[in-house]
Length: 259
Image (cartoon, rainbow, N blue to C red; front, side, top):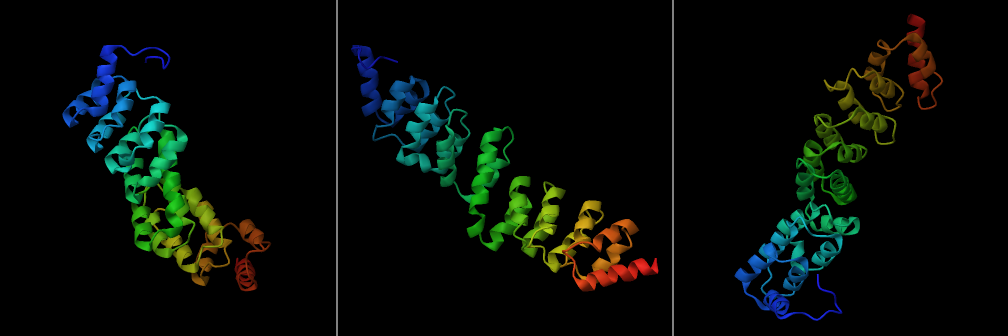
């Protein structure tokens, strides 16, 4: 790149002028082949369109500074360009966060599902999805629960909406730890507890069974059923739990007396 203090030779001046004033076809060649100084000039060309920006975003030789400049172009918000740019390894974190905000919710989901996506980009995209959950309609939450990865699933399921929880339970990316947190949190309603306790994949998990037994919202029939699968010592420990009500503790004493 020529120094700003150095005179520009005739050939270089011609390159820069063509980048600034050339037609769409000439720009197509420039953004593919020219060095970054010339490409930077091409960004100011009135004929520079989405196609040219997409070609630029796909260049492996972009540096962080150029990526910042590219993010200021009005057309970089177009979905194909934004998707290409977020995958560029030199896009700085602040600009990555900004570009992710321009994408639709399910564009972010599809981005996270792409093989070979850099882990930093995946984490940032998942964070962008999670930040949108508070204003997300129920139908979109259910669709997300069926399609998304473990990080978003954990955020989704903690809301405790039965329809969302039911969809999450069938997602192969759901982790037991997310269910354990839900069962020990304030949003585990009787309906949600029953969904977890009756699901073929989760119903026999010892840690989840114990969490269900310790939850004061567990339905009576399910609570009694669980007692038969717990050792006597654990049932005695349940009597000390501050989470259980007097009625549940009376069932515990009755069960211990019968056994």
